[in-house]
Image 1: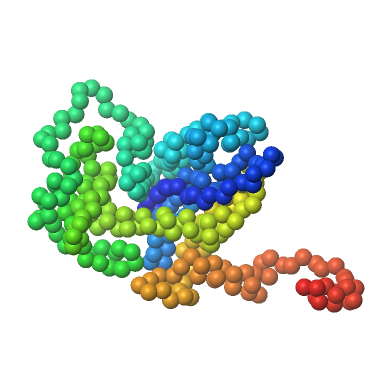
Image 2: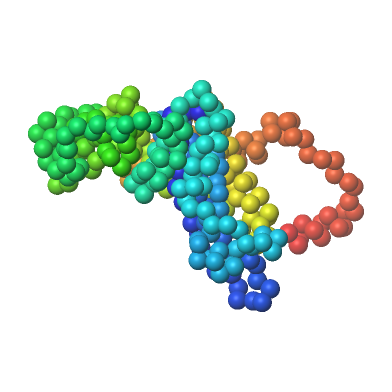
Length: 313
């Protein structure tokens, strides 16, 4: 499976035309998606794994989301994320999943349904109250230590402190990491107690690639350019876009060398998704590609018609 999974929401609004016969499927680019965070040639990349459409409840209640004249039931983002993650977990039973989320997804609405074994019997003893994250951040700051982490493409020095606590909301032990900056701090937590401070911070930094992955699917591959309104056509189009994104990163991972960045950007040294697409294009236009995928036999054409077609083109 790799290191970890991510999930989030990809949205691209497009209002349908105000016509009597307009489509009842206007939510083609509003989906909840999960994918694989993987280091490819020294940089984090997102490989889409699955998605579910997310029409809003008010849209469903208005009867504006229908397939085969049937209104779909409303399902929350949590319910759809849990379903997809559970399917991935069933497919890879011997591989533990590490789920990376932002603060919206990272709460009991996601974790509680994912727990299959609930402890029964007397309530757990939590011990003395430690206070909120803000109170603890002030208390433990003087005990913070300097760590070297690979964050946002660079090796950086950070000041952090970690502590294992038992929050009542999650009802399980978590490792909390406070990362201190000049004038503020951020608290990260993980239910995987085996993760080190460096790993937790680096995984959190890789979370930004969720947004980059959405951009790659929507703009680089072109999922938001779809003009189809048929439910099956929209689903197929998005499936192909996500598959193309994953195949592109798999191709990059199997290259013998690290791709070079074509366009210089300040403070960015790693290659971009578009650089890999360019390499694929060059390989497709090479002579070896014709050997693997020979061109179909061309029928004979009249010389005059061939010349006329060239002028038109």
